[in-house]
Amino acid sequence: MNIILFGPPGAGKGTQAKKLVDFYGIPQISTGDILRANVREGTELGLAAKAYMDKGELVPDNVLIGIIKNRLNEPDCKKGFILDGYPRTVPQADALAGILDEIEKPIDVVLNLEVADEELVERISGRLMCKCGASYHRTLNPPKKEGECDICGGEIFQRIDDQEDAVQNRLNVYKKQTQPLINYYSKQGILVTLNGARDIDEVFEDLKAILAKFA
Ligand code: ADP
Ligand code: AMP
Image (cartoon, rainbow, N blue to C red; front, side):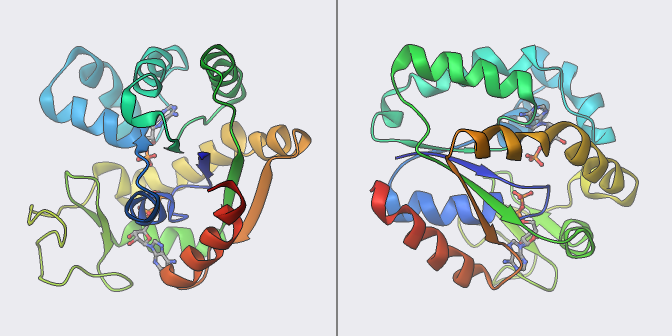
């Protein structure tokens, strides 16, 4: 089952991806998590990406292609994968199509989580993260123990790009550079749009119902 989880920042892609990983046993490939790990480790990629990320800009298209290609070729992607946060531009979608053609793993479905801007701002400004990639919200989805990740016990923190300055820019960048992919995948007949502004579990039930025919 080869899935793209699509939607604006804060739509719940990471939250739902974690649940899909548990349920279907296929990996989540989050370019945001990969980039943040590189920033933490101070790699060349991390150093190059940080300035873009902190401002809420996208990193240049060519930066992620090789990483995605290598990741999709790893053995755990044999049964399928969940792309979260990639592709985000038409050139990235074209590059992805080339890679998937080569390895004969076409995308089954693009799941588009729709959430209104006001709610996105509330979600992003209250988001707390763990370095394992788990995401929480101060009030909407708090961890069981304050300051501590439910999954790995790690310390949770606010992302720099979740601070007010970058949030509006990220929504603008989404509208300008990423939203055109809705039309791109809709034309291919593989886009399914669902209401992401419901309870986390309700959205998940809906996702499972849509995915049942691909499992
Ligand atoms: P994305 O990966 O799309 O940027 P996240 O999964 O990190 O989004 O979710 C953004 C924020 O919204 C997090 O704080 C998360 O806990 C919260 N959240 C996710 N889904 C829901 C939901 N259905 N209802 C309320 N809050 C949610
Ligand atoms: P995310 O965790 O998906 O919200 O991504 C956080 C930040 O990482 C984005 O604001 C971008 O700066 C960068 N990023 C993640 N994925 C991509 C991508 N596919 N293309 C360009 N930049 C990305």
